[in-house]
Length: 101
Image: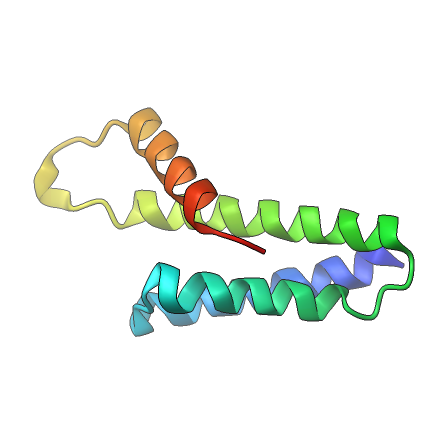
């Protein structure tokens, strides 16, 4: 049953990431709150608290991974060869400190 919630959630969240490539929403003021709202909306109709928490965790992990991928893709090309490990850690730290679902 939760597979449907995960598929719908990932689809909507993926579309939002695509939209944000051109819209360039502010992460903390716009993008993160919208991601959180979508996740909470997806899980709102799940009755079982364990399923609700599992779906929320999976969707939050999906969002985190997508955010890190986007961060890496947006590294300024003028900076030379990026240190992917360093940038991944920096993106993960920023996400973890800024995102609240």
